Length: 197
Length: 44
Image 1 (spheres, each protein chain N blue to C red):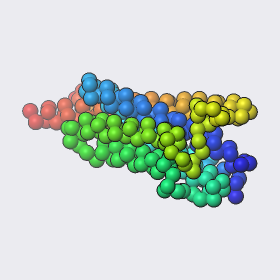
Image 2: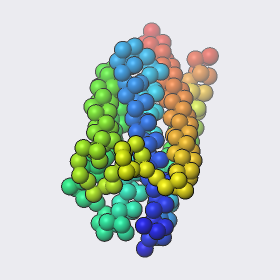
Image 3: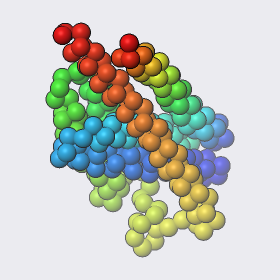
Image 4: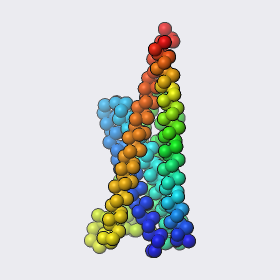
């Protein structure tokens, strides 16, 4: 592939970080449904938002890699590509729901939507194992015949750790911000009750 | 074309992360201001 292959070091770690964020989103959403804890709600929002950022990068770097290698930017017949776009749309709609709905039941609705999103996350991951796709077959944990050249493995793992750590940092910062936002809303509610008296 | 696409992928990645970090900074400043105002108001 030549130099273009180096997109691999951005594309795959971004996809891994996105999957990890969506997994945290699922865990936090389930915990929220069980406990109704605002902390879990804040973590669910933070992880979904950072997951969408990484998923956007995957959807942009993918076609930039595909064009010189496959001769096309995109194909709707590829299950991996289409299901990834669907995943992005599900989580964008999740964020839109959270942004524009002010109903009291919004966090519960968002948590349920997150569970549907997580089903697609699993499908995206498995799609290249279940279907014949234009997208390459898995190079890691893909069974016999798969695997990376040892020269690439080192650089790949450094990027994987760096992107994951950066993703974790972003989720943490966004979580703290959301907790402050919740505090602001609490104080607004207290002020409104005080004003009504 | 290969190098152009490689550079575009790098630039797109860091532009998106840069935009998100800017979004976080702006949001953080706004929440901090609002929280300060509300806490001062509740002390009075």
